[in-house]
Image (cartoon, rainbow over all chains, first blue to last red; front, side, top):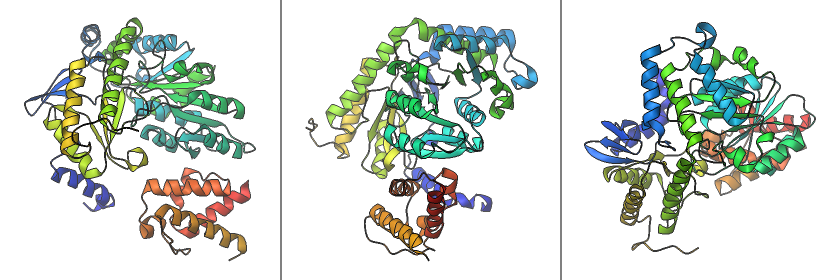
Length: 405
Length: 83
């Protein structure tokens, strides 16, 4: 134990979750039946926290492609692309992603986490400056450590604070790279990208947008926030993941930078990891094609997002500022959050319990994510359960009445 | 202690009191996390307030090195002279 004694505070928090009989790390699904339903302790449970935005994990055509390729090419590549070479699929996926984004180059990584590690550590180094939104995902913070650049945080979604900090660096040598996310993973809020792009133009910095939660979700063709905000030309690098809208695992970066391929020989998280298994690549290519061919998926996703967000808000819950597929409900305190989460689970709804310090403003959150595959009836069932537990726990006034502003 | 250092320390004391919500006594050896019971988020907000006041940005690796009020005073003074 002694070598782990430094984690005593975490152990304490972890033990208290266990004692409450509500440990999210202990959730084990006996079966996953569809993108929106699993079985937990014998109960059919609505999956409302799996980032499966387009519901493509059970898409027949994606499954077929993966099965076909696992039979033809085996279960794994057993090495990295610099050591073992690339399969045809790796190259094809990169071409199709570059084509989707209208960019010249694309690199595929083995996870979304590694995409941020691999891109950030290769783009900036000692003497450069990384400007991170304070609410950035852990993979961005970890990537910044690997990068060894000077890391400066600006206030969440605050272009003026960003500009002030960039101006302080005006005469300091080194490249400046701004990193923001399309949709932030905890509250589901979007970055004010038009304003951030304007700051980038005024200050001569580079701009990277992580579209992990916004790819397949935002924009007329599903490319994400940069497309929705009409500022794709200002975005130098887009990072994304396959483990949300595309229903598999992996990450990518697209760019028009003429020397982008240099990353393949300087990015250690790319060079020293086994490449994705061909079957994963195959289902991802097919999922990307589905994303492009079926805009109706996004329409259904956003309708479901609005149904859940507006339903919760009308009941009187405190939700995030925008109706996006991530819908977070603020809880008054940690104990209520844990008990509420557990009651939802017993009632047949699974979502994410997010506790400080992993949450903005130290607010405990019940974080849900909707899917295009949810039926309106599933959303309504979740809303009913939320209302029932909310009144029971005194989070909502009883009887439920719309709280006027 | 020269006048600048004292003024920076007073600035830190004011920002800390505002974060904690009551007047607090500090000296150079006060440990910000341990003695004042601030979590990482409170520390970040408090540091951002100081950054505004002194018109500097304290890089994350510098923040990581700061344990005491004395460390923070030194970091702020160095960054101010750099600009």
